[in-house]
Length: 212
Image 1: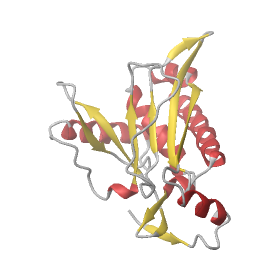
Image 2: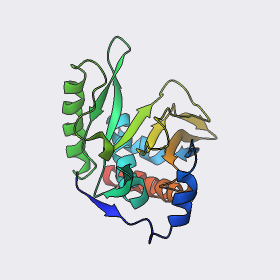
Image 3: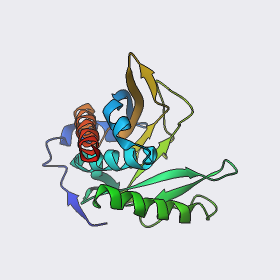
Image 4: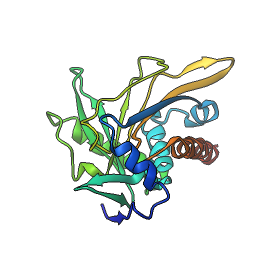
């Protein structure tokens, strides 16, 4: 994936960047209940995980700060990022699967991702494909309707955003899904996470409209 170097000395967030870079644990996260009622109804048997992944990836790529990473003491911004997610094998052990960044049309994304996932499930271990720095790290806990989740990370120099979601439930006639985003606070703030969730709502709406 192509990237450009960001001059943080002249970036509007230069102060915030320096402040959080001084911390031993600069990671921050939020879990938001997302209404997926119309989106879920419109799928009509299409794979939920890959459909939601498509919307989430496009929503995240639309926020430049979520495409920023720490590399050799500098900040770089990728042109686009692909989701690397956990796919579970029949024995309950998971492997990593890397799919398209959401540049493909929705139906083509589904077909391509199904093939890539099938190939990934034949592998062993936790080897990342390509350059993992340019990936979004994605996971799912479909058995639990959780209200909070914290991801593991490698320390203050780790910079790949983590995304996850849990089990959707019905609340007052609406279908609600807990969605978590976990980021290095040196690179992104609450406003950028807000932009992501707004983008996600729009992507879910557009997919629902497309499938009507």
